[in-house]
Image (cartoon, rainbow, N blue to C red):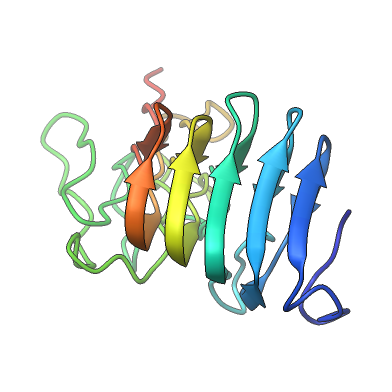
Length: 195
């Protein structure tokens, strides 16, 4: 099942079951319950120069992610660093990103206690480009059982334009009454590329 908020809200209010495959949800959506099974991956659209995208779920009952499935917005944040053009520095959402040599780090932004933005990519050693930070996941639910994963990692640096800092992790905010499961929740920065 693949849908975008600009196309269809017809699934809102239902018990959403995603079994296998990749699905995209943009913006805020309300469901009775959400269940991901059999290698299902739920993600958001790529953020771009027109603005940041997010995956926001308001769930009346439960979110369930089995051990083979995930919500993964890795690399779905913004490109390049937050207003910076620093030579090969990493994105700095919620904390300072990687800095090469004596270069100046990109300015930090965001509040780790209230994740409300996407990550930004690292800057390049020269030229134009860079990679992407992690996306933004915001979930409100009565309960959540996460045996799989929720990820909002930054993408790795590349060698396309010289040394590139890794993208900063994005944001994950869970407002749940009961949190259970043995899964993984992470919003890590991507590794830098060093030439």
